[in-house]
Each structure stands twice: as structure tokens, then as C-alpha cells.
Image: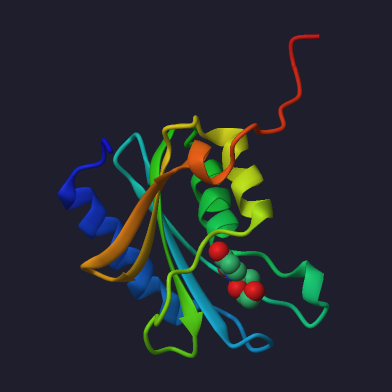
Length: 141
Ligand code: THU
């Protein structure tokens, strides 16, 4: 683990705080994410649902989209906090498969994923543990 305690706390608090902006009227499952770019900047995201369900986007991809739009291309870690209703979260919310693949486009295997229940209850994983044997296209041909 290379991310330091201060960054873990900054990211965890940002993910927990931004959850209140989650737009999740269909599932009632509110997710916040906070992404740390190697520049030191933090970009947040929430899940944005849609009445046409598959159109909705997860908090992790929203955070990445915001960072990429700002010109960021290198990332250190992301914190994710999600659960039913606005309380809690009562459980650890792991990124879905689509988000893992999305992250793998922009991050190396050592990218860290913090899954938080509260500011002092969290688990940290590497991207290559959550998504081994990633799919990649060779862009040199
Ligand atoms: N969701 C996320 O935003 N991130 C995750 O890691 C898991 C799921 C969202 C998608 C949908 O809006 C709601 O949670 C229920 O699946």
C-alpha cells in the first residue's frame, strides 16, 4: 500500500460527503466516489440514475469523467462509499465490473481502491486484485 493516511482520510471523507448528491430515485442506493489524481487534485462523482435504467452511470465513472475532462491522465487512488438510503453505509460497496474495466483503461495495476463504510472503517485493494487479466487493445498497430 503506497497511499498515505492523510490521503486515505481526505478521499474517504470526500466520498462519504458527496454521497448526499447521489441521484438514485430508482434504486435508492446512494454512492459517492472521490478520485485522487497524481497532480494531488481530488475529483468527486455520484451515481446518476435514469428512468431508462441502463442509461444511468456509476459514481466511479462519474468521478473519472470529471477528472479526465479537467485534463488529468494519471491516478493514484479512488474511495467509494455506497449503500441503501442516506444513512450508513452499512456495508462495503465494491465497484461493479463495468467500473473496474473503465478504471483499467486509465490506471495501472497498483492503483488503489478504498472501499469505505465510515472515516475509520475501510478496506484497500489494488486494481489488479479486483480485476486480474484485464482486456486491452494494442493501439500500436
Ligand atoms: N453503483 C455505483 O454507483 N457504484 C458501484 O460501485 C455500484 C453500483 C450504483 C449504480 C446504481 O445507480 C445503483 O448503484 C444501484 O446499482
